[in-house]
Image (cartoon, rainbow, N blue to C red; front, side):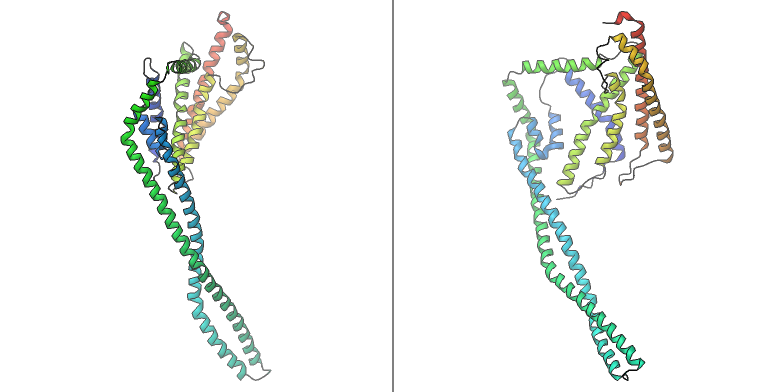
Length: 408
């Protein structure tokens, strides 16, 4: 399989976090517009083909059972790549042993001949020395050391020759297996690309066929139910936006929360790419995981104000839920000090972190080396939105306390 060398540029990462949610928000509002017909989107179909075509997801979207053809081919690619990785590991081990054995034979064989020749000379020196003399003892000591060294050299040479004899066939066999499975994976990959190219041409026709199937079904009741559910969900969140100057803060919290919620869709595409790159092309990325956990960290912080607006934070409602709106407001005002301790600390600490990161140009320690200062300023944004939403909530609680007529 060919290798994937794509590394996400830093500018594209940050631009994608801004542009993609804005486009998604626009398309969502366009789809929900009154009178907009339900149906299949051709641009969405092509996007699914590009992002998940190797699994045939574009055909599932358009209700085509032939999408199942992609699965066995894709699974075969995964199996072939697994066999290729195993063969490559075995080949690496065997070839390393063969290389070391060849080097040992190359270096030890000449040394062994020289050592064998020196043994004869040392033996002659021992024979010519006078028995019991110092010279004879010195010659015998040299002879003994040379004989020991010669024995070790013979053992090393014998092991090297054995390894060379045993590992050479293994290296050849695993190399052939590696080439075979690599070719099989590549052929399967080209087959999927061919099917994707054909489906890219057929996609408009598949869309018309899917819409024709839907037209034959009675979907009025289903559509009405979906519309009702969407309307309730929209009303539940948007109806929490207050009037007056606090409504400006509430809208900021609402729209920033909606915007970062679409980052979860980005994560689906990125992790899909990572899986395909790792297991199909044997090219794991050095940016997907880091980019996503940074994104989710920013999403967690920025969406805090939205969660507060929609009262989505965890709360013990045993005593709180039965209270009237005025009594709830009183309890919220009394306990708001704990909120401001947390939110103020978050905002102040984030400003220090962001300023320090900007001054030193802090970057990640990975090979991707992305700058951390935008993420730190996103922490500041999240803390600021949370503080502002707390101010809005406190103002609304004060209204509720001093306007008993609002109780209902």
